[in-house]
Image 1: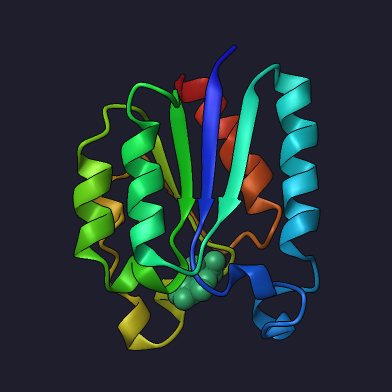
Image 2: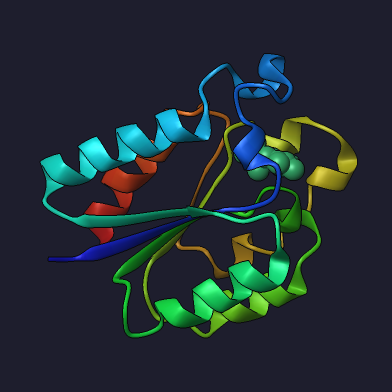
Length: 143
Ligand code: DQA
């Protein structure tokens, strides 16, 4: 069975409470539930994780080597700052989808740069929390 790793960065554990006018009212647990349902439908194994720590995300990306067949990452604020995540993702030779609930390019200028985009096969953004399910379908087709 193909294995897909879904990684979530800082503050995404606060979805539902955090700026609902931007991110909506669904929680990360709701999103995890939809992803597991879709995984079941597609016949893939999904490992869904969140961390507020950059180093932990780097370690998980390193561990995906030889283990995961595809990766979806919402690096949240680290998208716009983290050379470490960029470098870690660069070592992988599996399809990577960069995901955002909002469209960072339509927000503050400091969100316009992405260190993830140059190493991603596709970017899905601005589609709300349901973007996770679309990313899973898209990644499945790339496998
Ligand atoms: C986000 C967009 C980022 O700019 C922000 O820092 C986040 C969430 C999104 O999903 O829209 O935390 O990645």
